[in-house]
Image (cartoon, rainbow, N blue to C red):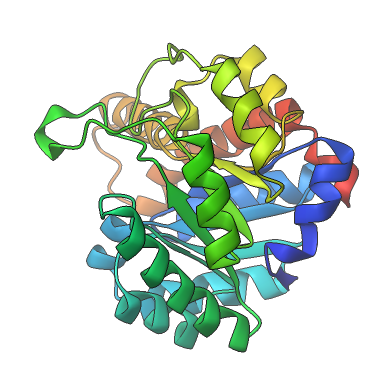
Length: 280
């Protein structure tokens, strides 16, 4: 069933667990993630980033994911990840997304807060949950030019109060697109943010988190955890192996079968760590 992020945020806070948000790029990985969630009886979030909606128009991929979510036997959120302007967010809402993120983290505080507040007003008018970001989670790929900056707890408090966001992404040591579980989390910073901010927190770049850290942050007000690179690596490595071992197979349905299974297994592993099956 299609749900909003708000349908589970407070429950996740109470139960000290985090809902995984998997970045998907099409039918195959989305189906694998939903299959994992159904097997584990866990809610899940299907997220599309700017790369996904550049490759496939937002109304096309959004429409497909909304249909898949509606037919799923577990609660599924369809979420816009890192929407960077009001128009894109509005298009996502029109396409049926049940949750959106406005990412103004590269902007000065006041501009980020104003833009986020405008998106919150729009989202809430349509019953859509809204995530904002303060501080900036950078990228491991140096070509992006985004190194990131840690979240200031006082700014986080002011931002949450001014914008009325439903969830707040903070930068506490992770980096987008990490291919190894080698991130170093600033736990003292998380504890400080917790003192000032009551809004449910979001962790981006979670592929880089060691398993023990992923489990620990779920107990520290992080109610949404974004995972993208882990399932892309699982799919890509498996597909590469399939093509190498089956050079005469050209049917994509056959070539995608095992990569989809690998994505499902990775999603099951993350769901197990985050203990979200207790929410269904």
